[in-house]
Length: 387
Image 1 (cartoon, rainbow, N blue to C red):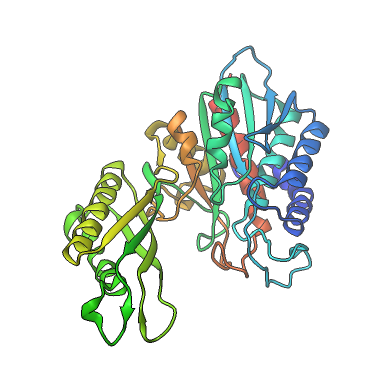
Image 2: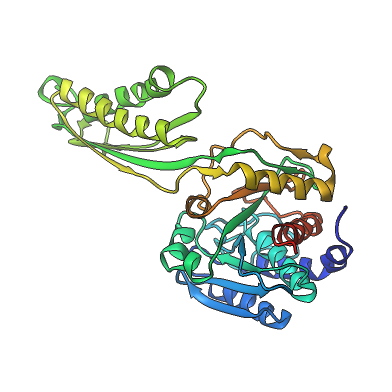
């Protein structure tokens, strides 16, 4: 079955919604206008139950099917934008300085709204569809906030599914894999406390810059010599703050960075080894070092059976030859992982064509992908809740 005819009919209308949202980006939990827009559309469509303010500013809409089943599947879209200045010069470019939809969440929200309109019209399923519109995906753990607000239990959600656009994958194609598809994006801050002094008398100091420089290289030994070579891990030091001028060795240096892993085992290894390496090198030079290791969202882990359902649905829409069912994992993070820790489900990439990369000020969502996304959501809901 190709793109649904009704999805194709909705293309123009949904594109208008998408461009309106693109013009009016909001970040993190401050998505009040976006959430109000979503709630108003759901009410217009005749969605049975609409609840706002979940996880501060999230929205959940419930559509009940024709049958008597209480089974519920959750379909999730993220609503927030990024603190980035847009330089696309599109007619629908951001009207808010320093904010833009550079990750396509405007497209995600609009595609799920299009699916909501279709499903509310047809209700060709037995059970309930929970439409989850989430704030604060970009570093704010909005998915976790909605979970902690009781969303899963309140609506009796049995399975959860997510979708994200991906530049570089042609429009009309999907990509997915079983297991870890996106990484756990952890953060670390290392504070090295030495003893400052004159740069001409380094023997009288404990130089935190020298110690920090050794740490930058030594941390790479975790990937090179500690982790299993077939298990992906990235450790990047992305910030090094120290000193004030050319002739003073400072008292302190601060290093910041990120760790990306695709398994909990490798994640644990990385955290433990960072502590050991930092403490060991600092002690060897008579310094004190403090590691603040912050675990963010977990690995985005696709469950086997639900991934197979997603592959089957996507194949019906675009054909098996247009599905990459063993796509390489991305080392970027995705907080939909919190939902996949609570319930079985799957996260899929939808092609966004030859556009600028995500989080790029020249990025824009490709509206030609809209009908494919709507069709995927609709067919997934109908098949997982088939009579």
